[in-house]
Figure 1 (cartoon, rainbow, N blue to C red):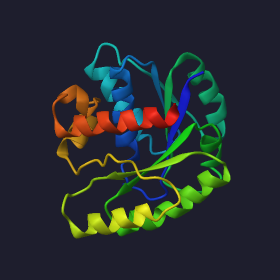
Figure 2: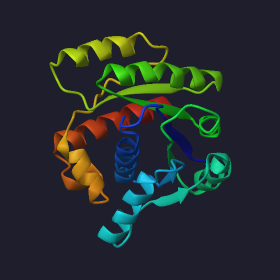
Figure 3: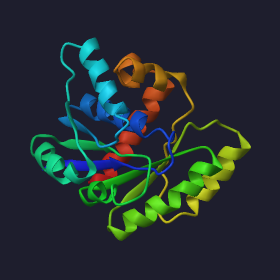
Figure 4: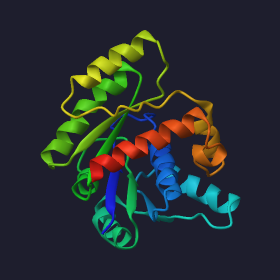
Length: 209
């Protein structure tokens, strides 16, 4: 059975879909069978997948969409035939998120370098803890040497879940790749963005065991 990774954050604009897409492509590049599941009504992950189908002859990975309450059924199907299933969730914390958390082997919580994102993170971690699910906080859209980055990093380190060593920079490459239906590693394997994603994927692999 494959592993399920849920990307969750109650604040919009934290980069959930960008993270889900690029981790999916990173794992795909390792020779894994990968699926992405979109349970966010906004459907950003689905739009990326359709752009990918137009850009490439073979998308290379499975895609499914579901209501929150259909998550368990879709995860069960997808993990039977894939090594990794990445779930993109709505930007809110309520009963809609619980089914995805219950299916998860790991919950990843992206935190953009802002105090608003930091404040929104605690409740996500509390919910993951209630469901007894392992969580990992990932700093996203980081600007090096900025005071707010240092302050948010300090705040994250005080939370109940570990912080990934790898932080993702505030890079145009992420938006560029997303719009083309690609991951950053497919644009350029040697780019800073691609190296960050590859490093994060290795950290996640280690946590999944």
